[in-house]
Image: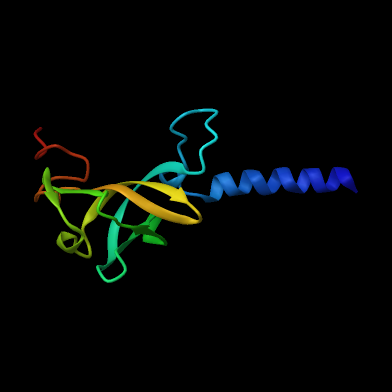
Length: 132
């Protein structure tokens, strides 16, 4: 019986690693750290901005099926085109990169950067128009 529990636990742990999007998995800032928070990052699309609760919801994962709500504070660094911005400057549909810390079951944004929209003829991640 004990062996069966160990096997099921191992399978559950592996499925958890596979099911979580790679860019959302926590990245420990210092191996062996015993701090109560975890540093992580994500890339996604702004789904909802709520200045009343100081939160931004970002859809992530393949086809935007998952969402992550980030708590925004005065310590959160928000940048648009390299310039300092505020939560009110973020708009639904914008592509963002965000870093956050998870504490007490909540995700607190440390930085949010709005990614530039691709220009006509560019593919995402391409620096400029394609030349042949």
